[in-house]
Length: 396
Image 1: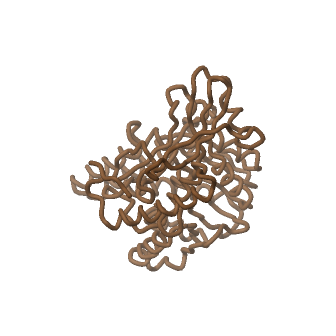
Image 2 (image 1 turned 120 degrees about the horizontal axis):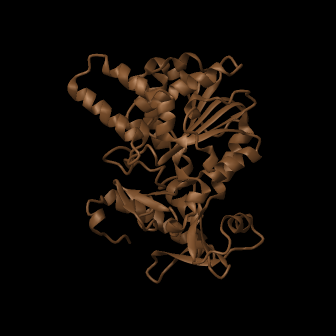
Image 3 (image 1 turned 90 degrees about the horizontal axis):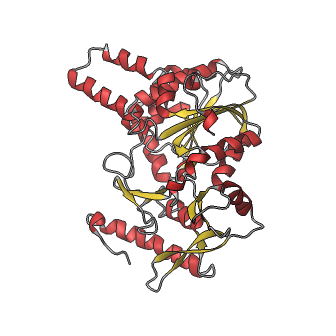
């Protein structure tokens, strides 16, 4: 069922079987849904099917041998700077034992790096929402192997709490929320993208006019009006729903979200007229996200204007927005680096440490691509160190 090509020359039989099984499930749903499903539904199945979905199955995903590398896998400098921000926020909470709630903890590295600091004495629990049983097992093993004395501090939740006090953290979570693909036509028509089947039972796109009575039409028609040429990009209502949910459960505390993305003006610039929807496989960019379901990490950049607007409409206080480089520098990563360099490190270790630092803050790597946005609720403290200098909220 899967056709091989050069990029996938080393694909295993197990991977082929996994993807074929998921492909059969998606085909069956398409045939039972008048021969089409929304692109967002395809992405949801490809990423989160309870047995074969990308984020649920047991394939290696993280690190240089996986599909992508996240900041915590680059260096614990990332967590050390983040903990400086956490401590400042906790200093301004009246609650004696708040919690930290992390979404999608990956292999657990960020959790480990945060708990290594004295913050573990200031929180009641470090809570994790993890959809993948496989990743939850990896996180638990990491914790028991490396910080067994703090195992009692970490709790895995099967669902969102009804109410929460503390710090909510999401590192590269928004980009993994399924989006819709929309085409704004020069003639004023707005199309929504579906996935259907060709004669060979391979997945292909199918566009049809967007329902004018839908919420999606209302949102899309406000983003782009009267384009000079056809323009295709994404609109992510599920991201908005996620932010609304966080606002509803947060009683007193803070939200920090870190991801790649743009302000709305940047997101829908003419030069991005094919959108930002893309896939990754073994560190390679994949333009065709309809191949190898379950093996491809499907992602789209974040519209941070939509995130900020949704948060404020739902009674969150918008604190700031800046690049990852600015945020980490504001949070003292330079001082952390200098302190490390004075601890009798070998020359080779110092070189590695500088390379890690550069990866996190370089404009050509993660520094400018990734953004940080912060919110609070029911706390009279807005002067976060992370946004002290070079706050780019005005761009939203």
